[in-house]
Structures are given as C-alpha cells and as structure tokens.
Image (cartoon, rainbow, N blue to C red; front, side, top):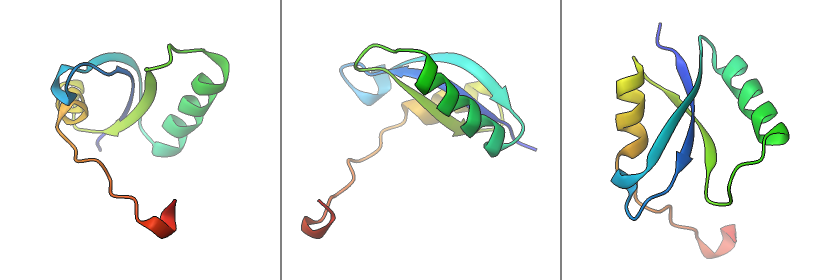
Amino acid sequence: MMPYYIYIITPGVSSTARTTDYVAEFDSFKAAKKEARRLRAEEELEDDQAYKIIFAQDRHEAVERLKEFREETIVREWEK
C-alpha cells in the first residue's frame, strides 16, 4: 500500500526549483488530510509556502511528483 506524504512547498523561480520539506507520512488519506488541516490552522507559514499532500510509493517519488511541471488550470468565465 502506498503512503500519503505531507510536505511544505516553497515556490522557486520555476516549478522544478521548488523547495520541498518533508513533514509526515500516513497510511490513509483521511489521516493525512486531518493532519494537514491541523497544521494549516495551527502553524503559520510564510506567505508563499503551502502544505501539500502527495500519494507516492516513497519519499523520492513524492518529491519528484511535487516538482513536476503542471500547467495552470484554465478558469472558465462562469467559474470565476
């Protein structure tokens, strides 16, 4: 079974230059989501940082997936 990881993401000049700081590992999404919500509510991050949950086979794959390029989502006029 693949675990869920929580990381603190700090953006860089590009998506591949992001800094990822490992926080925790969980066996279920429900537990990871609960902890991420707790962290967001109780621990202040810098303005450009964020907590992210990622599903991966190991920590190395999690970092690779967090750093991969993702296109900006297109927001339709009616979704604004």
